[in-house]
Image 1: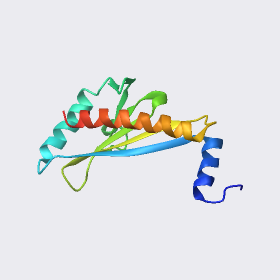
Image 2 (image 1 turned 135 degrees about the vertical axis):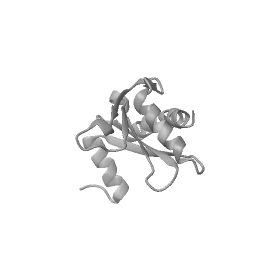
Image 3 (image 1 turned 90 degrees about the horizontal axis):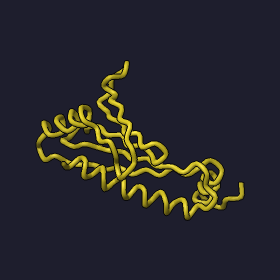
Image 4 (image 1 turned 60 degrees about the vertical axis):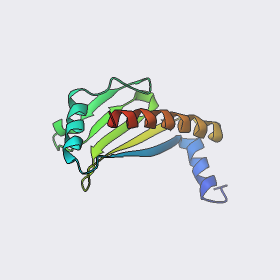
Length: 130
């Protein structure tokens, strides 16, 4: 395969198939499950129109045939954010995913995605702590 270890192999796959990076963001609402319910309802009723300057297309999964307490924010080519309440504590969890399909320089792609993750994570944290 050419790669001498796991990192080399993952780099080969990224160069062939693209690079994906993820980051979780969690916000705890100390002993206030009502705040979690309220914020999820607000996200459904009035989703953000942009996240870190990227246009948002929101999808409320409670409206699906198999409902799930989840809101997805599609950021187009910039990535996506999945937001859901914790099932065990007063917390909202967000999962950010960003990708580059055509990678020619793995380090440059990592730097680009890392910067994008930082900006989106900051915006998501602000959204969840409003």
